[in-house]
Amino acid sequence: MTHRQILFIIFGLMSGMFLASLDQTIVGTAIRTIADDLHGLSEQAWVTTAYLITSTISTPILGKLSDIFGRRPIFLTAIGIFLVGSLLSGTAWSMYSLAAFRAVQGIGAGGLMSLALTVMGDILAPRERAKYQGYFLAVFGTSSVIGPLVGGLFAGAGQILFISGWRWVFLINLPIGVFSLFMVTRFLHLPKRHGSAVIDWFGAVFVILALVPGLIVAEQGRTWGWGSWGAWLCYGLAAFGVVAFVIAELRMKENALIPLALFKNRTFSVATVLGVLVGFGMFGALLTVPLYLQLVQGLNPTQSGFTMIAMVAGLMISSIVSGQLISRTGRYKIFPITGTGLLVLAFFYMTFVTADRPLWWAMIGMFGIGLGLGQLMQTLTIASQNAVDIRYIGVATSASTFFRQIGGTVGTAVLLSVLFTRIPNTIAGAFTNPSLVRPALDAALNPAVAGAANNRGIMSTIYDTIVSPIKAQLPAQVDLSNAAARHQVVNQVVSRITSSGPSGSGGGGTTGAFNGDTAFLTTASRALKEPFLVGFSNAMVTVFWAGLVVVAVAFVLSWFLKATPLRGKSALQEAADKAHEGGAMVAPGGAEQELPEPEPAGVRPRIADGPEPVTG
Image (cartoon, rainbow, N blue to C red; front, top):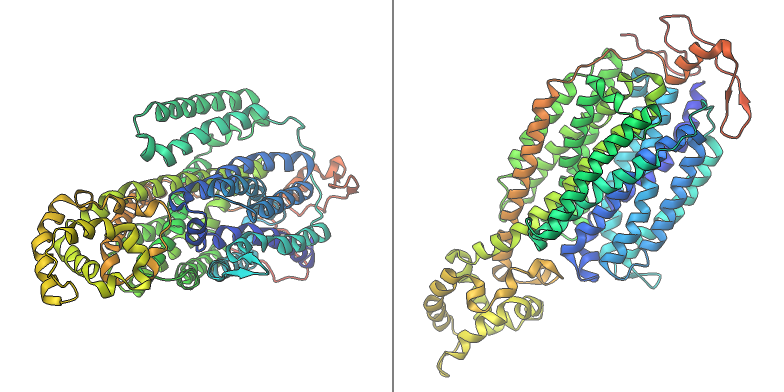
């Protein structure tokens, strides 16, 4: 296969990957605006979790189907499903309807990333992949930068062409998807090996049964109670699904959705578990950091998108450097260790976040997270592909992506649940701090501040129920516009409020303020919203501690990764070497294509019109 042919194939893969990677980043900075417009910030976990559940489940199913029917038709089908889900998401009328339509999107997205990586595994040897990694990094990096910016611009716009701005976060996928369909149809033409026509439907059903209940309880456990009958029902269904899935996979053997024999390979097993843990930390950071930037730092969605460039820059730098070093040396064991080590340091750094930290302080932590992730994403995929027989590269790639997405799905659900479970306690705790309550109460009692247009939202939502009883007990001659008189009133009541908390002063709505529309924080005076910002940042600290524990486990595990020597030939070339005397392979369209001539033993495949391979 010539260098020119490889580039054309990569162009087709890049267009599909751009769809998936753009969608993962464009929603993050717009989710607060979407949730406020649809009145349900606390339900945002359903939107993200629904997408991740279906994309996770569809990943191994579409990977298996591509082994049977060919990469190209399944890739095109995935794009089509994704576009239908995008169109529906743009018409959502509630957070739950949006979650349902995002689930449709996720079905298609499950095939876009994993199939692109599978094709790369087919046509390029592991060491050669690093030479072309820059193209994929350009797509991921561009979408990671453009996604938050475009998401922020759409979220910040009132209407575009008579349609609410945030709806274009999903509708923008339509023109991109049409272009992607053209590119894949035009350029992605690969021979395929005959695969078994047996589809593991029982495995698909049981993996759904294992995942969905567990994720539902992760989201709803804080509402139901972790020991409620609904939670225990989900625990039981998930446990039954796991056991049934394992039994089904053992019976299906090589035709299994995820052949369990792969886990006998130590490198594949350790890389897979690392992928789960890294996915937990990565998706958790991508979903929670924008909330901190917008709610605590006061950035609008567009500014939040610009700020996320710090994480993208770290990811790009470390990915390029690690990819080039792998290509030159053929060694990769050090990168999972240094990558997880940097994640540990970055998450530990972020546990010191406070409401009054400057923005650059948070950006340093985000840059560190990016440096760690950049050394792990491609490295773990290469390790998994390189560790298995060429017959299993497709299923190994989809399994690797599948388990990383499981980690991301669980991480998103768990960390957001931890965040919104902690928020009522941390906000209530902030209202017991006299240094926060005193200026907030002084501002709420000041007629000029309380009556300002920018404070109407926070006053009606929170402070009116606190200050109304206080005003009712004051003598008529007390002038609250007078600073001295107002300070005297504050001094008299502040100890009562801080000792009983906001609920004891009629302000029970404070602890539920983040369950609905948080737009009142955007324009409110700093003194009035300071207790909420402190409470939210304190809740974020708990989230980062939870993420730190997970990435610390990954760091310890990374030392046990056995780095097998990287192969010098692609999967297609190795298959050609083995089967050359047996005839030809069948192309996806049904026509036969001659196998490439096998290379002599010990010689790496020649790529015409391209740079000479770097020898180890």
